[in-house]
Length: 77
Image (cartoon, rainbow, N blue to C red; front, side, top):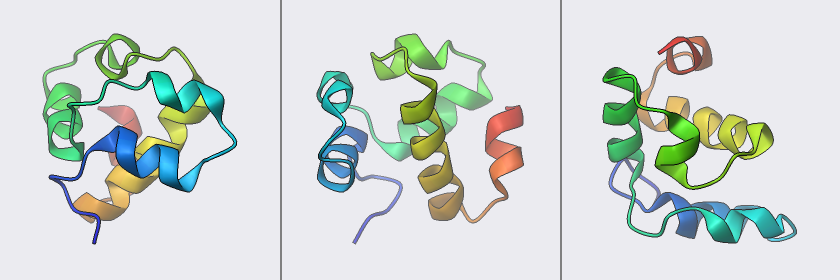
Protein backbone atom coordinates (compact mmCIF):
# COMPACT_ATOMS: atom_id res chain seq x y z
CA UNK A 1 0.00 0.00 0.00
CA UNK A 2 1.31 3.42 -0.95
CA UNK A 3 0.83 6.13 1.66
CA UNK A 4 2.36 9.44 2.68
CA UNK A 5 5.33 7.64 4.27
CA UNK A 6 6.18 5.65 1.15
CA UNK A 7 9.49 6.44 -0.54
CA UNK A 8 8.95 8.37 -3.75
CA UNK A 9 11.84 6.78 -5.66
CA UNK A 10 10.72 3.24 -4.85
CA UNK A 11 7.17 4.00 -6.00
CA UNK A 12 8.28 5.88 -9.11
CA UNK A 13 10.81 3.36 -10.36
CA UNK A 14 8.30 0.53 -9.88
CA UNK A 15 5.50 2.32 -11.74
CA UNK A 16 7.59 4.01 -14.45
CA UNK A 17 10.18 1.36 -15.19
CA UNK A 18 11.01 2.70 -18.65
CA UNK A 19 11.84 6.17 -17.29
CA UNK A 20 15.59 5.99 -16.70
CA UNK A 21 15.74 9.46 -15.17
CA UNK A 22 13.61 8.22 -12.25
CA UNK A 23 16.61 6.38 -10.85
CA UNK A 24 18.06 9.80 -9.99
CA UNK A 25 15.27 10.69 -7.56
CA UNK A 26 16.66 11.02 -4.07
CA UNK A 27 16.23 7.72 -2.24
CA UNK A 28 15.33 8.92 1.23
CA UNK A 29 12.35 11.22 0.59
CA UNK A 30 8.72 10.32 1.19
CA UNK A 31 5.49 11.76 -0.15
CA UNK A 32 4.98 13.42 3.24
CA UNK A 33 8.41 15.06 2.94
CA UNK A 34 7.39 16.35 -0.49
CA UNK A 35 4.11 17.76 0.81
CA UNK A 36 5.98 19.65 3.53
CA UNK A 37 8.58 20.88 1.02
CA UNK A 38 5.77 22.26 -1.12
CA UNK A 39 4.19 23.97 1.87
CA UNK A 40 7.44 25.80 2.67
CA UNK A 41 8.12 26.60 -1.00
CA UNK A 42 11.31 24.60 -1.51
CA UNK A 43 12.68 24.20 -5.03
CA UNK A 44 11.01 20.91 -5.91
CA UNK A 45 13.47 19.94 -8.60
CA UNK A 46 16.38 20.27 -6.17
CA UNK A 47 14.33 18.51 -3.49
CA UNK A 48 13.58 15.53 -5.75
CA UNK A 49 17.06 15.46 -7.28
CA UNK A 50 15.73 15.51 -10.85
CA UNK A 51 14.93 18.35 -13.21
CA UNK A 52 12.17 16.76 -15.25
CA UNK A 53 8.65 18.18 -15.42
CA UNK A 54 7.08 14.86 -16.45
CA UNK A 55 8.50 13.15 -13.37
CA UNK A 56 7.33 16.06 -11.21
CA UNK A 57 3.84 15.85 -12.68
CA UNK A 58 3.58 12.08 -12.17
CA UNK A 59 4.70 12.46 -8.56
CA UNK A 60 2.31 15.38 -7.96
CA UNK A 61 -0.62 13.33 -9.29
CA UNK A 62 0.21 10.53 -6.86
CA UNK A 63 0.74 12.97 -3.99
CA UNK A 64 -2.66 14.56 -4.63
CA UNK A 65 -4.25 11.11 -4.53
CA UNK A 66 -2.48 10.16 -1.30
CA UNK A 67 -3.30 13.46 0.42
CA UNK A 68 -6.87 13.39 -0.94
CA UNK A 69 -6.65 16.85 -2.46
CA UNK A 70 -7.13 18.17 -5.96
CA UNK A 71 -4.07 18.11 -8.24
CA UNK A 72 -4.30 21.90 -8.59
CA UNK A 73 -3.84 22.28 -4.84
CA UNK A 74 -0.52 20.42 -5.07
CA UNK A 75 0.55 22.19 -8.24
CA UNK A 76 -0.23 25.67 -6.89
CA UNK A 77 1.73 25.17 -3.69
